Image (cartoon, rainbow, N blue to C red; front, side, top):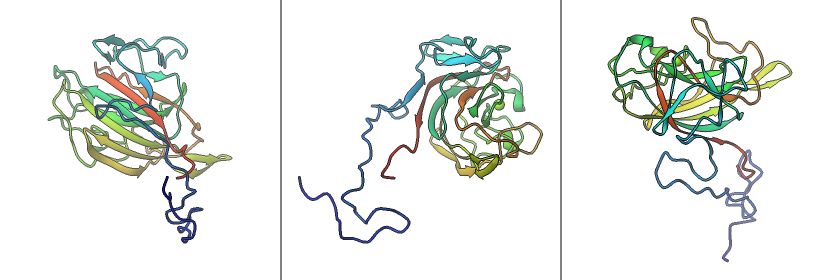
Length: 250
Ligand code: MG
């Protein structure tokens, strides 16, 4: 094997490594999926179309999620309430696909409304990236498709037509608390159908409705991924997560 790097170069500013350091650990090998959007080898698959075994009811944690599974997707069953993953995550990369009902009903926040919540648990919903059918459907900007609900509108409206599958790729950095004090806020990056909606946007606090979001109480270190029952038959498929920042050479 040839020479890997150098041991006589300067240290990189702010890092314990030299430029081209031969001792710097190599990144872990991950095998990407054959098709972009499918889970890579290190992903935690949360829904592959088969069943809701990774999910539970939020109304009654510990009991089965009551949403419908059919033809490779899950669908909100109105009135069953939100569902959440049994597994918990902190910093993570999330891929999720969704489709608003093909038959257009309602308007504004009443059309194809659901939500992807991060850092949720039994007692709180956490941080919402809005799911909504904003194809030719005006609503308040900070509640439109892909908004950080009640905080920041998306940079663009990249909605596909109702009934068509759409994707979110989300990178979430959990807030850091120390003895009741907020040390670092949450940050979120969101891509919608490959379009950038939020670039490491600082969150103002967990999501609320009709109130200003604040860091009022310590967030849990890890939380569930939660999906919202807002009364509309929104569908989801191909949901996977990668926990982040475990690599010791970063
Ligand atoms: Mg919603």
